[in-house]
Amino acid sequence: MSDYPSNPAAAGKLRINRRAGIAGLLDQIRATPAGNILLAFIAIQVLLVAAGLMFPDDFRYLSASNISIMLKAIPTLGIIALGVGMLMIAGEFDLSVGTIYAFTAVIGSVIIASGLNAWIALPLIVGGGALISVTNGLIALRFALPSFIVSLGAMLFWKGMIFFIHGAQAIRFEASDTFRNVFAGSIGPIEMPFVWFFLVAFVFHALLRHHQFGNHVLAAGGNRDAATANGVNAARIKLICFALAGGTAALSGLISAARVGSATPAQGGGLELQAIAAGVIGGLALTGGRGSVIGVFLGAALIYTIQDVLLLLRAPGFFLDIFVGALIVLAAIGNQLVGGPRR
Image (cartoon, rainbow, N blue to C red; front, side):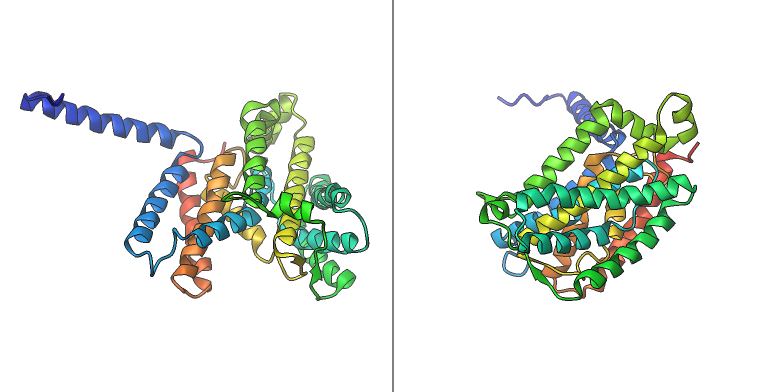
């Protein structure tokens, strides 16, 4: 016997209640910091999976090789975007993260090739990346300059320094097999770069949503004067976020070098803008004070998903710029409508 009501009126009421329940659930999801991007990401994945099942030979989205490539490639942008996202929530920008990504990968490869153990080089390189970004923050805060402008200068400076120190040649990344397996190997079908991406996201999410530090980041980005009046050292919080941005850029550079087995001065171009795009698409306010790590995580995954689809469709590379540019504007408009004007 079916438990569906035989009375037409009761059946109609049940359908209405179900629709109301689904609508209520969607409203609850949208109300969360990453709700809109989560729904959009799920909808896009459903469409792509359906297309992959319907046209398995022409659209190999679900192939094992494509999934493996995505799990390796998404963290390159994703890990950088997480650090940049934390900094954006604190109300600042760092356009030098793409150059930090390349610079630290090259310098790390050089010092490891010279004989330094990769496990010793790792904290030195990550710390060096953090120091570069903190320097940007110190200059911006000390002289009351927009961090966007200061980091733009730093981007060009360190890009030139890469070629000055090492030239334009690629260099092999000669770390041990153990180091490579930890950062660029796999555990069954799960690629280690994605594991590191997930771990960094987990730690940043815990800091932002379940620790006093996260409250201070949101306060410093939302209204610095009010945060200071309430005892928050906004400058210190911002500098810590600068360190997170530079450190994650350096970590991503080393993971990428371990994955491909080499580093080149030309790598990393455009990553800084894609990282900002991931944050905006993920619901971060350009003015600071609002956003979530989950949103940045999904925003980075969505950008690479678009890139992967374009590659599978053999579309010209510039199509990615078109789509990402449109997404940035649309997401920024949506974020403004949802968040309202900044106080």
